[in-house]
Amino acid sequence: MQKALAPIFLYALFALTFYFLALEAHAQPLEEVPFIISPDNVTLEMLNSAGVKRGDHVIDLGSGDGRIVILAAKRFEATGLGVEIDPSLVERSKASARNAGVANKVEFRVQDLFKTDLASATVITMYLLPEFNLQLRPALLALKPGTRIVSHDWDMGAWKPDRTTVVAVPNKAVGREKSSQIHLWTVPAQVDGLWCATGLLRGASITLTQTYQAFAGTLAWRNRTRALAGTISGTELRTPAGSSGELVLQAADDVLRIASAQGHMALAQGASFRRAAGASCG
Image (tube, rainbow, N blue to C red; front, side, top):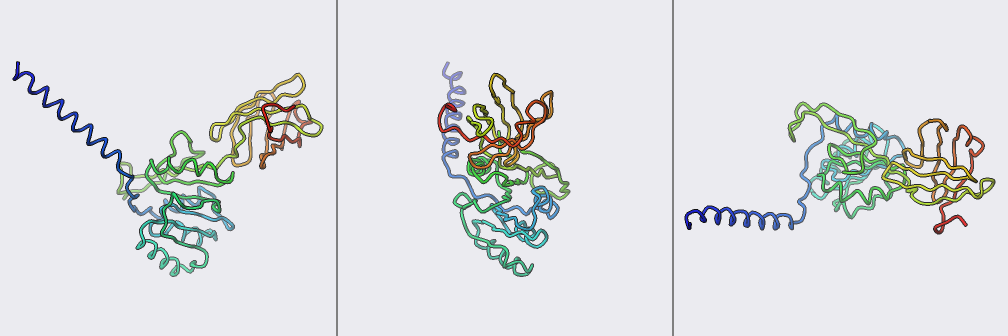
């Protein structure tokens, strides 16, 4: 009996040891993101995917050798900020910016990316580990609607990208796939809740629920209702054309405006709705 119990005891001891080692590893703080060079074609596709242009301000989180910010300034005439935890890479980035003739348009800082003020960005680029993306997600969703987010390879969980492109990378050193995925998101306006009509449509209301860049709800006016469902791109809400025709709304601060309407809603084009202060429009 003792000989039979010995293997069971040893197995249980091994399992218990593994459990506590796993707990200890989980309790450790996240390691720094390793610096892996993004190939030039990937860097270019990230900026093209975001539609970077003059007037944009690109913030690259974990900027490495600075190539994304420098390319954004040199080729697309944008300004930029690179945030990197490694001082030697920041100095290297500054030297590269001087050599590229764009030192007056870009800045590089030794800084914790989680403590970086992102409010000035119109475009954010990143090549981070998945857990870092998820930690950043709330801050990214809180940015100004229309801000574009581009991530190399890693997504943001339940917040699905608006578009993903695939770029061939024959010499890719990470993973089995010899390609890279470029994910793009556009920060959606926050429109969840009740909206009350003003002007000639007074008495009408829009009630919306929002999940990232998707919305659903109802538009009620007098004794009629219309179901709403569609997508949000920046400040624009759009329902697909159906039996009632396409409906396009524009969000600006606490106002929703019907920018385009078809069918029986055509006369409502231009009408505005304000976010309700309470639970009703009374």
